[in-house]
Image (tube, rainbow, N blue to C red; front, side):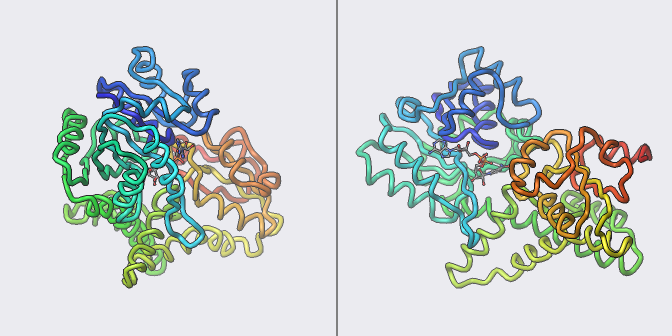
Length: 400
Ligand code: NAD
């Protein structure tokens, strides 16, 4: 199969590389010439375990290539996958500008009779709008598919090669057959729905996972008051198959490029149809408050934090990734700096990304080259990302 993936971010790059690994001929396109040059040189612009080896291997086998020329990449493709970003607008709605631009460029270059699939997370109704947009610009026949993505950063390659489910929203039997063939060997459920339901499955899944996190965080807050141990409570709950043990880890709340934006977007989607999603509003509110608990706890111990030195271990929004988008560390470090704290920070992978995302505040943080260096002489250590090197250090009680 000839596949073109538009957008080589965390989703597009992993998908493209994995489809090549399945034996297909894949061209990955991105607007960012620096990303493309990096990829053409055999490097990858993100940290994702196992991805670089697969990328290099498939490029060497001639099944995978990278280009910034969408026009050439789209011509002759059997399947065109849109995997560009849908970041939040200030009001919480998904910004569809990148999707629309990609759709226009695809429409203007398309030939043959391709299937056009959107992997980006998009509000219900977007696939139909994009189909109309493409139709308004080309005579070329094509079929539309909503193909939401469920990979997790940090385990994106195994998640893609061994998915729990593939969701395909389409009204085209031909497109369904093509996607069934593409994912045939991967295992997992193959769920075919109408286009709108597929779009909704993605938002509903992320909203549900976010709800679990906020739920256990509220249980943790109550546990602290009543003298129970939330870790044991979560363990005891998790054995119940109806509940499950995943996403029951209390902490500083969720971050990242998906949960915060997708929960807000679903609240907006519901609102457009005069439905107030009260439960999800509370999930977001709980999450926002939770990340500041750690600052409140420090104040409960030290009183005024001015002049204290506090080490921060972990800056990425989760372990095994360099992604710092909406990472709780950003707001927590901001709060500490506002209180006159000397912050000493370390992350095994995400330091550079964090520094560039943190803007002006970066100059006020002391960036350390190791966990122990950050902790040396500090009044407290805040563990903000559960990287294995921190967790195992804690387990071994190797703290200074
Ligand atoms: P990203 O920001 O890492 O990557 C998007 C890429 O698209 C960028 O490299 C950008 O340069 C490129 N791009 C934008 N417009 C383009 C155009 N017209 N032509 C070519 N390239 C273009 O985003 P991401 O994290 O990969 O997420 C992509 C989508 O997938 C989003 O809708 C996101 O919500 C969804 N999603 C993300 C994850 C995740 O874990 N990151 C998981 C599931 C779904």
